[in-house]
Image 1 (spheres, rainbow, N blue to C red):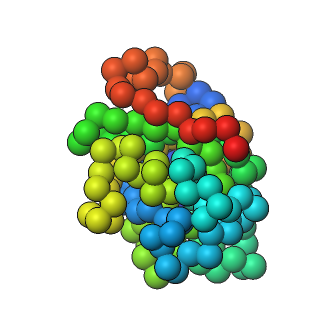
Image 2 (image 1 turned 90 degrees about the horizontal axis):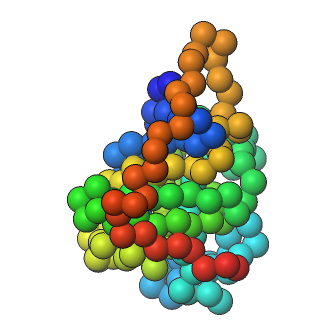
Length: 170
């Protein structure tokens, strides 16, 4: 089932939620002067610069205007996100550790990854941006399902056909 939520379209696939061709940027660590290193989950990217992590523009209401209206509901931190770079064929798994990107200033940005996670997708961070598909594993239960919608059965994982890197345990 595909559902349009401003500004992102998502597909419910069994227990997972997929977003396709999403503009992705990187954040955190010593090379990001605009980032303090503290995340909404409490994890420090400056203290742990090697960490794979993801930030999603979850709509947590008016108290965080930067992501308000994204259509991505609040979910628990540490839920796993799989990002797939179709250009390089590489994919990674990263826990959700932060809110962002700011969709009010950049409505086309739908995923932030820590610099190591971004690099593991085969992208030079100096490029700054990459379009990826991403999946929130076991995230479907957080998304409202319209009464007229049908949910597809889980697809077979494409994990076997891609070089995958997993996130370290925090």
